[in-house]
Length: 276
Length: 210
Image (cartoon, rainbow over all chains, first blue to last red; front, side, top):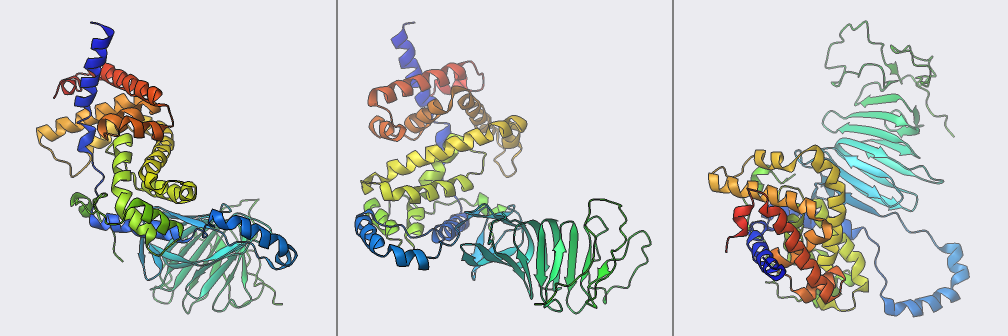
């Protein structure tokens, strides 16, 4: 068979074979199309307005004239962020469907905030130094990049967690008014009811607060505290589990005994932040 | 809170026909550049089906491409400022889609090796289980295995020219090659794909269909 005959056969074969992938189309359900559209609009809306090229020359001249004053008064641009993963937006909230994995918010300076399946949250404010992320319900995991002057806040119900550079998990249930914070790295300050001066939480610690009940600070290596409010559930005797350190009354307490003797762990004290 | 359930997936409908909009691409580009409200959404309505279809046909039918579709649109928004001819939006979008597809293919190369796509595809729930559809699915899986062996550039050339029906002149612009080089690449892609398919008992019957 000649070379040109081969080419003709392959041309014919390729045309026939191409019928297989042609069975694949780009259609989706109306709901998926709308979800994709919303997701794109959310990401698109966070990008700064582009400057038309034809104004660049004029803007450069004006900038030069106003350079001195601009330099003194100019504020850096707020961070940008991009939404990745399944999202359903409603009333300004970013909702994560239960069955489609986690939703990620990736900020331009490297910070990543993930919302777990079934959770909802929103970015309430974005500044050049950080952002305020509100957890409306569910689970949030954040890896905040530490920078000079970085200022991040995770708000959940009446609580706010001030972060400067750390990795943490936050769980908030608005029905039970229960906040759980697990800190893997760095340190944060938690403010909220009965914590007006702020409570320092360090790496390796778990902080749990419930409505109308004492907050608890314990080691991540100790057994997880009861999830239901203690006033509704009778206390069970669990001699192998060390009791969590109570936050109230707000007096410095001695380091709590831990079940796992880990020499590198910080001491688990419930010391309120000194006021002033 | 509403969500997209698995049941919705099976109820596939044609939501938008890319060519049916009354607004032309040039006007759409102008609106997006001016960041007019809902301009991004209109661009999505008009072109998302095309982008998704190209990605699915390049990456394979059994992969979730939604993240890649979003990435393609976000890259498009960045590139729009430098688009001198707004009527060339489609070519720009296909070019960007290929870049996204290329990075996806590289990212998935190791993953596909760990979890063979054939097993996933055949075990996928909700698929048609009659013999004809099963044969088609098996043949599709085999074809994408062949695509994995011919190299990314030849995969793109084959899919765009033979499957998508993109003209050589437009393909030349999208691939950034001369017309002669594009023609040569298309012929080479056909040669490689057909040679491998001819040796595959599941694909060989599809080579002679008219």
